[in-house]
Length: 396
Image (cartoon, rainbow, N blue to C red; front, side, top):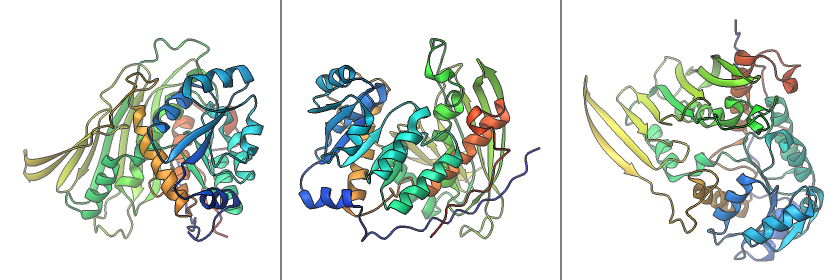
């Protein structure tokens, strides 16, 4: 059985008056100049990220690094990037790079994020930040110690629709949230045996897309404490392939006055392309985010008028005009929202983004660890972990 340990995470916000030396030089250079990004890895996700970056006047991809000089040059030629590096170390150490974006496979996120932080570079690392909550905690503490900006690439949180969702929840217009339900799945039938989805540490549906739904718990229950994680599922090629999970949040003395625990329930699968819809049910109504919810463009708010009766309001959040048409992943033009938010945060001297904080990265990592453990057992990276441990990030 699973024994929940309520964890207390007490990250204090860094003063907005403090800047790392890198951020200081970037801002001092010219407040009106684009932020200069270095792209670490020349893969598919990096390609989409750079294409979106070219649509943001405040950002400029000036360098790319790959495992070989030829691959870096090929990527640079395709994406109009002036500098190339045949290894990651040189990009991180280059003084012209203001911000590092890490788009490697997840197995290498920890090592390169750590090196980037130690070099004093503001860093955006694709999700998951690391392969386990312990490593995520270590990187957050390191960023805090070195006074360096760090963000996990939870781009969904940066969309205008998610800002509207926060407002609706905070206003209490649909009442306290009782439960959240959602699904996320895509067919992996054509993913060959060498595909990253089958890697023993970073593979599986939960490590790949589970964080997209897990992050809704903190949105729906902002004053709650993580209480329990229950999960079951199927395993294919040694990794979790389909998952059903329920996460509970203890409300305690929350400001909404609703005493029942909050519930987050979701399905993940690599066996089918699902609707990818989210529902947040409140005591007086509900919010429905149409699929694909991780690229949220349409939201319906329904206000109860009695059992089976409601009025509704529709909110549309269209994606920016798309000059490309073709992307490796659908909706990737939405990266523009995260790129802008990172730039704004750095200009204000922040070390984390308000849309997805360090505390939230750590909480989501803890939930993901526990789901994978319950469905398929310990991954090699987690062989020392038994269940969900208390996670507290030092506040000093």
